[in-house]
Image 1 (spheres, rainbow, N blue to C red):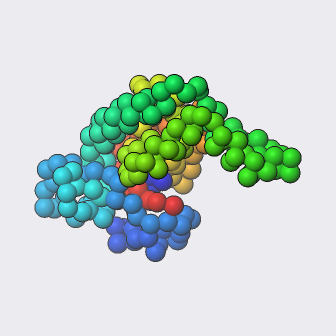
Image 2 (image 1 turned 60 degrees about the vertical axis):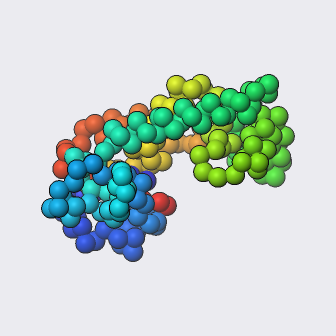
Image 3 (image 1 turned 90 degrees about the horizontal axis):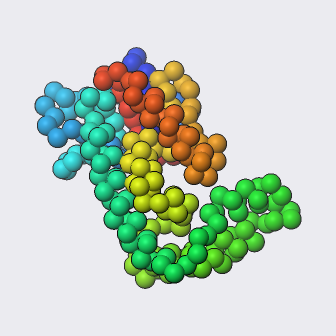
Length: 216
């Protein structure tokens, strides 16, 4: 979750132990944002959870000191590489039904369509078999995930745009006035709607607005 911090909230209060008190969320600070390349000494004090590195990861700070453009570009490049791997992995398989559709069917009528049946039928698809076999044979970060099957099937450019937008918008957003923006479900259509709303909100923020990334 990306939290737009109220101006009056002091930096000393921004710890994992106080997230529930201030924002009614339970989680930990997530150093997934990037600080700009040339931070001055006094600017470092404005960053939240700043770590060493190039780029330097942090959990938050003023928008003007965050390299959101660099994050989006890097995410798009990485997504392009993963998509090429995915195309090789699933070559020869037909399009698969994404997991959210199985999940929705289960949630609509859990007695007639139990969760274990939904999981089994999702996993029974040849394209999902191919992706899971690749993940088993080549474990590690950066591999195509069945959780993003619907995003991959939308095409390379769509997947790159999705990952680039998600890099700065996360999975949900809490505005400075306490309004929560989040997808209505895990389907790609609802995620796209969320990303449109979140990016539009980011574009309206003052450069001094502070952002905070939280893992829930």
